[in-house]
Structure formats: C-alpha cells, structure tokens
Length: 374
Figure (cartoon, rainbow, N blue to C red):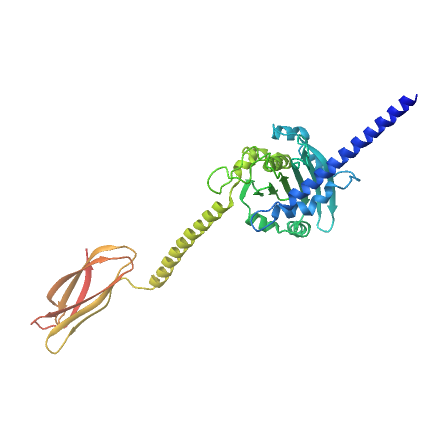
C-alpha cells in the first residue's frame, strides 16, 4: 500500500511538471511571435511591425464572448491544409469586436505552424505565425480614421509604398509588402478590409530576404502564404463574383514601381498630346478671322514710271506645293495693256508668304489686278 501511494504521488508530480513545460512552451511561442514582429521592417518604415504590435495583444486574451459572424470568412483548417502541402497550420486564438463610433466590426485570428517545435535554448528557434484580420465597415472615411488610430499607419500610404499592387475585381484593391522576417497582404473592397501577416524569422515557409530573380526583384508564387490566405477569404466574401477570381491573387499582383513608371510615361505622353491639340486649337482660333488667298495687294507707279507690285498670300489648312498668280496691268479705260505671271512655292498650312516685284512699261498705266489660277 505504501508503494502504491508513493507511485501515485510520483505520477501526479510528473503530470504537473508536464503541464508546466507545455504552458511554458506556449508562452515562449507567443513571445517568439512578438520578437519576430519587433524586427519586421522594410526600408525606413516598420509597416508590418506596426500592424502586428497594435494587435498582438489579442493572442493572450481569453475568448469571453461569442465570435462575430465574420468567422465564416476565415479559412478552415482543412482549407489551410490545401493551401500548403508542407506545413500544418492550426488556429491558436480567435477574437472579434465592434466599434460603434467608427461603424466597424472585425475578427482577428492567429494560426501557428504546429509542425515546428519552439526551441529557445539550443537552436533558438521561433515558431512561425500568421495573423489574420477581417474588418467590415460602413463608411470609407471612418475606416481610414480607425486604421490610423488602431494601426498607427495611413492606409493610403500603404498602397502608395507597396511592393506589389493589383485589382482582382472591380472595387477591390490589393497590396503585398515584405521584409526579411515576413510579409503582409491587404485587400480592400467596398465594405471589407482583409489583412494577413506572416512572421517567419527563419524563412522556413518562403524566402523573402534573398531575391529569387534579378538583382533586387522578389517574385511570389502559390507557396506565399499571406496572398493565399487573403485570396481564400476574398473568394468567400465575393462569392457572386467568383468568376472574376479565375487567376490566383499572386498572379494578379504587379510591381508598384513599374506601374507608377508606366502611369508617369502615359501621363507625359497624354500631356504632350493635349499640348499639341491645344496649340492647334489656338492656331485655329487665331486663323478663324483670317482671310485666305491674296491680301494687302498694291500696284503703285512712281515719277520715274517704275511700277512696284506687293502683297501677301495667306494659306489655309492645306499645304500647297505652289500657287500661281496672274497680274493684269490696265490703262485708264480699264483695258489690259500687259499681263504677267508669278509663283509662290512650298507653302505650309496657315503659312503667310509675302511677295514684291517691280516692272516698267511704256504704255499709259492706270492700275493693276491680281488673281490666283490653277
């Protein structure tokens, strides 16, 4: 009997010790997610870090109320298994809340790679986690204000500075950004914001720090988890528009820099085109009241009998290789006493060409006329 009692106490001690070790491991895993978040930076901004630091408290809170109906949009664990064939991801926490001031409702969830064991001593491994957030909103301006207060970042700046952007359907804008310890995908529809952030310090699930192609270019494929998670949720939200998602989200996303450069080039070309049109319109306005053909013609005789012929030819909108002119010299009875021809060559659209000539004749001269002929 004494031996049985000692054995029972021993078993109880082992069970209690095992519980302590398990609990400690979970706490250490949670701390690992925080540590990963604190180092998640890209360039000068800590975008992904700020997104996590603002929301990581929900991982440690106990679920005390019923989850929002938004839970139906979260990927099931079976769907997570289909997204990745190499890793088993499982939910470790889900929470939801409402904010009446900003008219938003949201659900947050945390999933963890349960195939990995947290090892803080020998290899100092930290288990990878994925944070999911779905926000349903009624007012576009209010949700932007909420994002600024809750995330300490500007939603518009995220889109402007994103590495990749894309529009999988009408009214839906998506972005992708990354650092050397994780990545983030966000999609915004007319009433939902979907966000997925992965913290994977050792890049066991995807390589973000080493470019896969080119000198500095990172490409993503079906193995990138944040795009896969957001795509799964987006398809559920936009069930009626499922045909629009025939291409995977990662295929739709394009380089923001290249798109901006193309937009700038298109804008420059459009400005040049507009300037050309404006210039032509202004020219047309100037020419609107202008008389075409021969203008300001004069034929004057001086005291020495020398006749000076002058004038100008105003061309219309048609370019001409040459213009033939015929000049008739008349006496006081308006009879033709002499005639002459002249040519103006290579006249552009709306061009004005002046002409000047001299002639001396013995007959009694009174005046002259001029006309063009084919």
